[in-house]
Image (tube, rainbow, N blue to C red; front, side, top):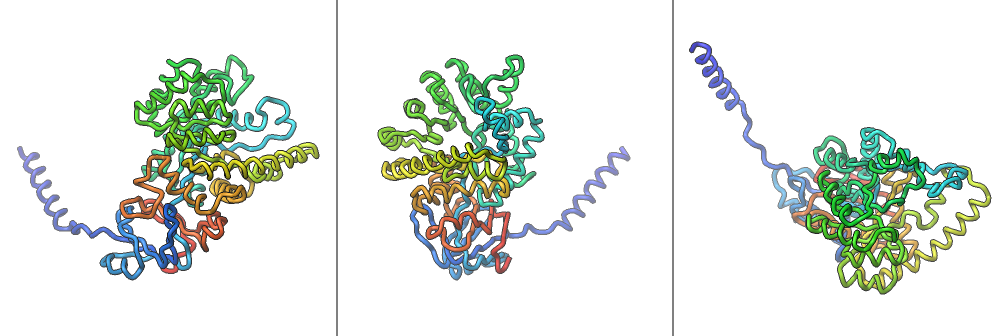
Length: 456
């Protein structure tokens, strides 16, 4: 019994010692952010001067600096951002954080089907999952530093790379935006990758996609992604899948309370997505006015992806490879046609009243720019195509939050929302390029970047 008696005495002494030295719990520390202006994207109203009171990673109150300084008595940290404009954290609703394609030489592009995209995609597929997630961690950090505090990753991330990256970010192991992960993209046979060695193609494709060729397989593909803990389902259709297969995918996802984002460019594919009840249609390049009306009536979002508008892809070409005179001429002609098409596209979208958001669709290595800087080019592309600045800002804040189903968490600077904030010099409504100059980033009350603070 002697050892047991000694153990009890030791336990009693330890608890007494620990209790004597335990400090009383300290009150929650609040933070007050002050700036010259705060933009509410939903209403377009400006609060000036502005202050935001934060506690435990959430927004507690919004008002004037004088008012909130009185409400935040006690242990309060004040961050004065001077003559900046505060906005909600930006949302990139269509990105590919685990893909960083390098433009291949012109001869390689001409040599094979889908020669521009295929070589880079195959290299990504053959990467080790660990290396690919580490690449994604770098690109996620770069996105966050440019003000994208939330992103929706829509495929091209291996079997579950975006899920693993999401979980690592949520656990605080690596910095990055909040991620809605879609896992493997659902596609038809022959999409994206063509003419592979038949002995190798099945396992390679399985690392990147879930291939659908009948309704029963469509339902199982959704369940497979759910097993990997995805947040939504991404489906790509370019007229190869049947209406029954698409409807089955949407039905199973909705039955499991997941949204479905459908890549659709052609009129027929867009109609199939509308008929199936998609939650969002990605790209939608050839959408008709009648389809826009139908989408508006059904509450289906159009997720605009202005990645290559305004000659952006040509700029990547110029910075990456040597182009022949013939390729330069063809690129110039293609860029001019696209400018005309996108101007009409934006005009029709605005006129239709359809709900829309915007995503970068960025998956390319852009020499001289971080991933975040490359993604932010979409703001000027939308503006050059005729979209007003306030509509652009809404498309990556309040409207995007609604499309994601996160309107109670992000997309606005309001009490109860997560403390995701960005600040830019100047007025982004007067000059949208200000969104390319994010100088302060906060996610969940944690400062990620601060080049504005007068009193940190």
